[in-house]
Image 1: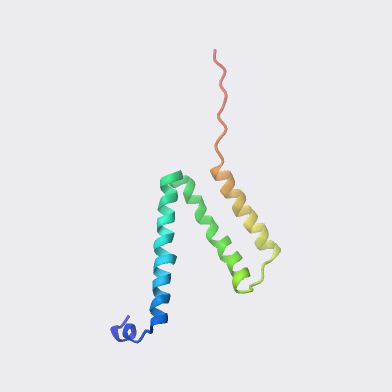
Image 2: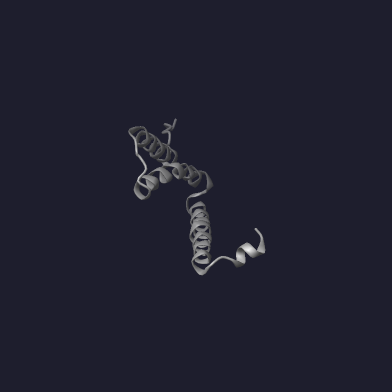
Length: 97
């Protein structure tokens, strides 16, 4: 980025960049690392699968994009996979001899 381009930005554009930098990046990383600290890297890693689902839902709500039955099915599969990955494993019962 050239310096003269940055100088040409008005206040609204600077505030937009600040908003994207703080909320879109910094707070997202803080929340992500807090989740890793609380539930561990393996369990929190599966939540990255929510990105496409979130994008589709926000696109439908905010941009009036089409939401199809296949998208709904895919969202259900994503949520089901996250549930299964975070479900505690059943402990095997071994009988004492």
